Image (cartoon, rainbow, N blue to C red; front, side, top):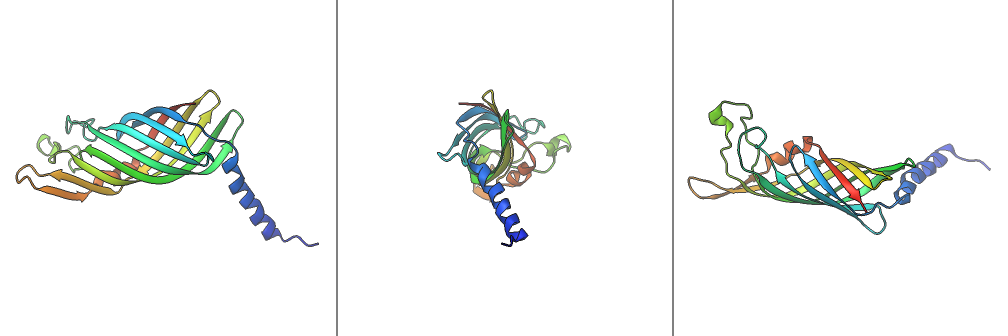
Length: 194
């Protein structure tokens, strides 16, 4: 009987990619959200199979606060449904790569030019507004034996920024520019797992 090496390689690759998804089920987690975007609380709830994670973040949006451009603090809520792509079990800890999509709703400032400009153009010109955006998330999580989990992720949030203009009182809508620039800002969540 002849064994074809390419069929064996494909079969082995499929086994390696599919089998780790059932290697272990992550539980419910609640913890803190830390990012240059803001800080707050985060929760993760797994599906029954353990191969999908629902992530909820509620945080203070600090765009412009740390650079001194404004004293306003926004608020943001995001939800993503993530699919676990790969799981590694090391005995004392388990790690996983995941990616998914969801939505972001917030009341915050949007990106404006003039980050380190003179004092006049450095202040934010637009008032705070509402953001409705798609939240595309990818991350890496580590579950330690002691009930602590650490997740690091990046999130791209293309969406719409809706605000009222001061002078005319008109309601204006535009692209949410901070959603694209914010994709470069990592998000760190430290969870207690139960």
